[in-house]
Amino acid sequence: MHRGFTTGLLLLTASTGAIDAVSYLSLDKVFTGNMTGNVLFLGFALMGVAGIPFLNNAIALLGFVIGSILSGRIVPRGGAKGFPRASAWLLVAGGALAIVLAVVWTVVGDLPHPVLLTITFLLAAVMGAQVGAVKPIGNSDLSTVVVTNTLANLSRDSRLGGGKGQAWIQRVLAVVAMGVGAAIGAGAIHLWSGAAALFVAIGIYAVGTVTLVASGRAARV
Image: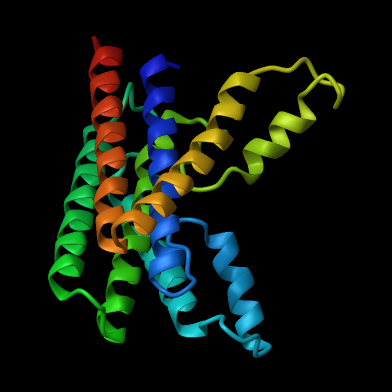
């Protein structure tokens, strides 16, 4: 794999951490990238656990699924060399949509519940589409939205786990990227606001997208 692809995926992973910090801390305890968390929250909400909104998490889950379906229709399956143009355009469109959402949030300020749900849905759709967009690169350790599988592979393939420690640097960096992104998002919320933190997350997302596109062009040469 072209080294630039790894860098781009790590940046998108960091942006997911930042966006999930925004959605969880500023959009009423919901993830827009980590759907495992939302499924758990839905179970908690069904049992009446206080402070866990059912509707918000259901909306996020639906948005992510629809974004993934959309990417499945747009992004070619297999055989693509480098980074498909369809993937690049999908990431660009997702970034543009996220910017619009951040601008709306900035203008509106305190979000009425319908607007909050709409932003949650569309951010989750962007995250779902992002996963499909990077699929052609074929790196299961860098899905950009979760690091559970990455941690499992890191541990299993470590020398303590009986493996040879393969790809450990990349896997550690993926976990660190998610955590650093979350810290950046939380810090931006603390210093400024949820809307401002979303702009910061979009900045990381944009750098990751540009890196992937540039790497795709290099790979096709």
